[in-house]
Image (cartoon, rainbow, N blue to C red; front, side):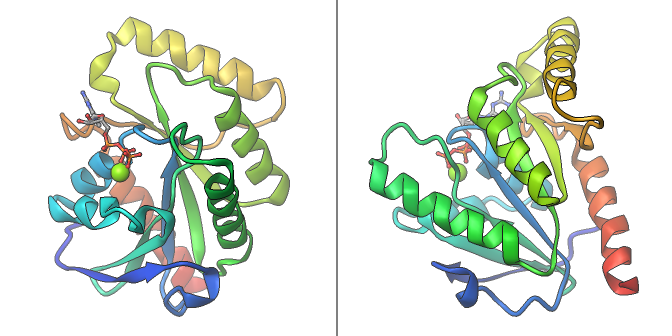
Amino acid sequence: MVIRSITFTGSSPSLKLCPPPDHPEYAFTGRSNVGKSSLINMLTQRKNLARISSTPGKTQLINHFLINDAWYLADLPGYGYAKVGKEKRRSFRRLVTEYVLERSNLMSLFLLIDARHPVLANDHAFMDFLGNKGIPFVIAFTKTDKLSSNEMQKNLRRFREKTLERWEELPPLFLTSARKGTGREEILDFIEKSNEMFKKS
Ligand code: GTP
Ligand code: MG
């Protein structure tokens, strides 16, 4: 897929203020510092998208970008922030929960996990929540350039084991590096194929 155009369509503090669900949508989330902004920039090959998202205040909102006038990329607030208070964390969670449960055009949620330490309790708790609710999601391991391929294989194995303790199937997995551009084609192909399903449905 060639990215021809990107339009920032706004920041939404609640589901009902999100743009109308008239295009297929892919949402990105993960723990703070996981590399979300870097991955979004890498996929779109635009430097300032992430800047919009990281403007203080906007990080608690859902930022929508319309790509090629055909699909939405939604940048969701992260979770597991150590620095924010309990009240803020609760409001992030409320917003993300409402969004994933009710956003009718959501094709897949991209859950980003740092490839160096992929087995963290709150990532697995979030995956369990998504699985139980039947929300389609995929995993994107980030920063894979920071590991040797041996370490990567070892971490992947642990992740698989841990996930298959509770689930019969693994979600689709993408290995990414924002630094090297790894995974870009695979993710954009996946989105392109899913977009076709939106048209058919
Ligand atoms: P917050 O919005 O602050 O929660 O962080 P984020 O999830 O958007 O992460 P961000 O993209 O800002 O990246 C966090 C740090 O990881 C930065 O120092 C990045 O340069 C680094 N980083 C992100 N992706 C990669 C990657 O693929 N490879 C390497 N080596 N570093 C990365
Ligand atoms: Mg960010």
